[in-house]
Image (tube, rainbow, N blue to C red):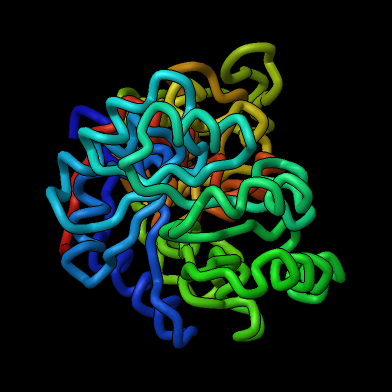
Length: 344
């Protein structure tokens, strides 16, 4: 293998979506923003559409246009960022549904694309996107038949957080009597009480194998090729800054990958690759394109080493970097990997 390989198990991804769909009596959409969390918009969305997903969510109109090209006519595509300046032609051409977030966006949509459908995003307390209650009350009469009215939970990863109940109450109050489907729950909300599910859920990170959906099947395998193996004697160092010095003679494999591929430098001191069942620790700093890995304890120098797979998931890597699985997946999507898809 000459190039690092990112393998996406579409069967596992579909199984995760179905499992989250089965958690609710509501319809399940699918969030595929950021190039399907870095795993490839067209193959991921196509697999989910084959599995029965009919409502998809992206961040920007340009993503929606790419998704429409992949899926063709039929599925409904919602745009979280709403109707931005200059989006009207794209919204019309790709038959997108912008989720309007402000009075300014409502005015823009009704002026630039009044014939196009729209939805509404409400701010139930997260203070990120969405119409405030007073603004919603003002513009609501002008939006006769929104395709969807939604909001987003700030603390759904912690089911017992009191913010969830406050946002649920606020969303119910703001949508009382609304003649449109409602949506509040993404992955975390799907795992909570059915009162959060409303008419449509929006599974995202759980579909891709990440927390808080602890029962998710692993979706991503990442294997990096070994470029060179060398013997290091006791007292010698590996990598920039001499941060690791061998206490005994060691064999070090240099693998093709680094922070230029979304493998954050901060992971290094805690990170291990796997050769089959055997963990192999990183030695020295992760650099832009290369990582040193100790393979002294292996019977023979390996041709590849696995970073993500059955032994280590995206949230394990995230813990080493002090971040979340979302960031790991989307960062991997920017890497120089040969993507390969299985199943689907």
